[in-house]
Length: 510
Image (tube, rainbow, N blue to C red):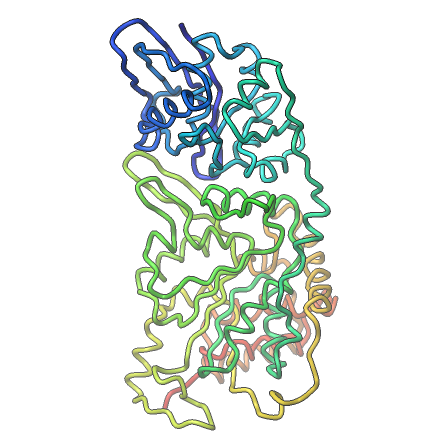
């Protein structure tokens, strides 16, 4: 007796079809699983046996062999429980095999026969659509996520017996449907707003420029100056997510198991803030079976690193590849996976170990060598990839107690969206989506600088001792400032403002 069930396995953020073949032959009772299964898949035999019996069906007392093809790729996770159980029931004549082959089937089983949620249902739903399957049978908790792919009938189930009855034509299961527009509208509220921040008008302007051009930012200031508060509100002024960005971000969160059961899509830009004690695998991704790290979970959003010099040096150096390429590759002996990691890096640090260097209200207790060693923890190659450096001073008392509130995030986001639209039009066909991604070739073509602006830039570089990398970052920021004003030519005022955003380059310790 032989049966075949179609399921799916997730590799990185993509899914591929797995054929689950079940053979039941006469012999001493045994249950073996082949096809490179991991521990969770091998343990499925005990869950499947109990689930079949507790659902009211007979478990065959014969020699059972389960093969998962292709046999040369590793299978992991408990999502193969349901297809294995259905394969056994089909091989014994309980389930209609012809009906079963029209669907991709995925789900973990409890000992009572309940179907429990799994990871990666969105990539599986996309695979079902691309491979031409009629539908997807999946746990009820994963139905909203999978139903984002409207071309596939997503059938949510809660029990093994429910699936058996459906495949035999004894009951119907309504397909799960969602309204994408309603999801985007419902998730637009971030819970925080730029109008909550008192004072710091120049820092808000700096973050607006960073959001408009997709520039990486580092903020330097004493404790309590509002660096974290400002950073947490940055996603509220970033451009609205497109459906394509939302799908790609949702796939990453889905395979990581971080998507809530009631959430179909990640419709707002993610904000990730790992602690400085995070491991290499936690930040970049990894493990025996590579999982996405914080740099991938922040894809299309913001990665905030507070107390930047406290992060281990090797952690910071490993971020250079994702910052440069927008992807991170994790290689293991058995496999190599690539995750997308295009994010805005926002970092915060104190100006010195005690935090009060340059603060007029507090006396700094650090020596010059201590300050130099502290700042040297952030390497030059990493600073090369940060366009904007801004000082965040302590908030004045009258700003804290004043009734005046700043602009709302929605108002700032409108200006950011207009600037991004200009950039998308400018870079059409260049595989560049914002000013922060420009290379030297793009700068020469799209950043014309007049005579007065050239003289100002030359003066700044000579007198302030700015480096060649600072020149490139200034031009990029100036291009974004001009876009915010809707101007094609970079003016002297734009260069002047951009020079202010290179505070670390012109800091001199006495």
